[in-house]
Length: 443
Image 1 (tube, helix red, strand yellow):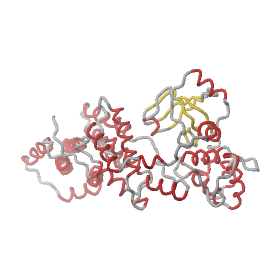
Image 2 (cartoon, rainbow, N blue to C red):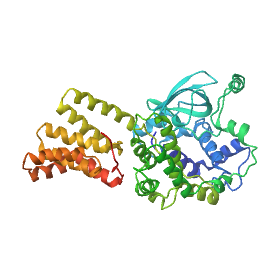
Image 3 (cartoon, rainbow, N blue to C red):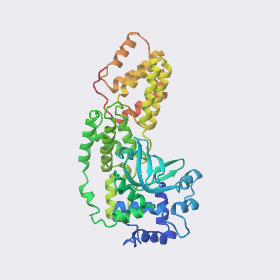
Image 4 (tube, rainbow, N blue to C red):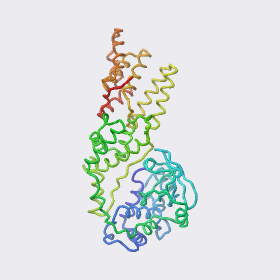
């Protein structure tokens, strides 16, 4: 689902004078009364309360005309959306809020969730939650159809995922119509703890940097990346979904044959999310998501929309592309090998990711150009491999062979390669990342 899909709907109804009475009626139904100050501006005591009400209002509350805000927005189309964007609001009407059990977790791709009250099973596209949920755990959430697949679309689960005894699971199953309102009233309404104590206990940016550096070092990336460089990426990147874009880039630098690859994914993800939350961003006026959250909650009583846009991690498919390179290389099919290498560069540039030993890829590209008697291309990419990692001596050995053959290079051809070749275009992107690939290697 595209970012701001639900935010657009909420903004329309919360800010439309025609629906002021309906919104106040919803607040009274949810809380039993209208929270003080709400008649001027929507206010909530904490983030959990706000997110539960917002979700319930969008999907479950019914206007006097009998339609939920989601149904009414689709029928009314107040933003004059085109048919493609409007279709999302139609399919979202097929949704279910309940306690779900994780039947299967496919890391980085999705979940198989079973509604414990009905027994219905949903295959759900999901990324971030797959690194934290375990099979057999139960948690409340909302599953909805988004065009042609299912996603978790509700607020963050207010109750942490747990493994339940058969007896407790049976107790939950007795309640057939779970909703965010029921969750709030049963589990959260009477909590007396200080809502905002989390702000006083939250780590500092320096502590988050230290944690990030420790995790990078633990998993073999300490000499390649630093938390300082990651902060620079986060701050300067104004693209939508910067959080997961940067996370995908970091993860793509892991060797996927690591024995503890899964543990590395989870630890890097956890430490990165903490760093991201505390890191200033140019797109937020130099503030961090944490500061935006704190300021808006404590000063204004409203919640910012600071969620990442989440997509399937692209580095998983990259592994398969490398396997094809090895297959063609074993067959001595130089053209197919080179085509597949170029496809990898195209893919990495599109998704703004990398691979652990990128200098080897440039060595291979240069070598296969030489095999095809494309000397200018071969020399150019061997020189790039050498520049990326001066400790890697194979590019230099190959360059000496070319030099000893007394081949004259055509500078015009080299300039054309720099303009057109995807490997050189990716090299320009790679330089901007400032990753330190100058590491000693063993061949």
